[in-house]
Figure: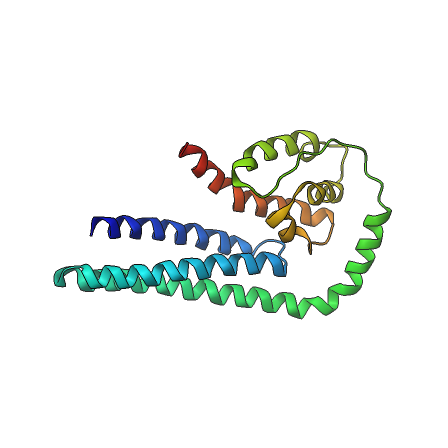
Length: 201
């Protein structure tokens, strides 16, 4: 039973962090790829919560049953809310897609014609262990460079990331407005996990 209670604490912690991330999702620049990544995260935790529910309620005492049942019901409610939020965010993207296609084509043309100053860029492969080092190097060479516009910084950022992070950014339009939102989204996704992994070693 102790192992199950420890697992419950871990699962609740994961869910709490995911709730915070998806709450922030509603106030930042999104793409279909970003939402799909969060949907996968929700589905994984959904499976963990279901397994936890089965194990917990089948092994707890009769005295504790009602309390645990209420606690698990709260976790399921949070998961349902996250699923609804993600579906609504995906609907917004679909509704806006037709209106933004023309703007996207113009933006892509402008970006292709934009000549960037030569900068030695760090590379982030979406490995959580690499995030803190990448963050510091990128900020030093690009993020804190006052001679660059935010749209240039965003273009450098897209050139610097690989793997999952590149997938998250691939549909983001390069504008001054989007740079800080995209940087905040990457920081939110990778920094907390990177700190946790760092503390474990």
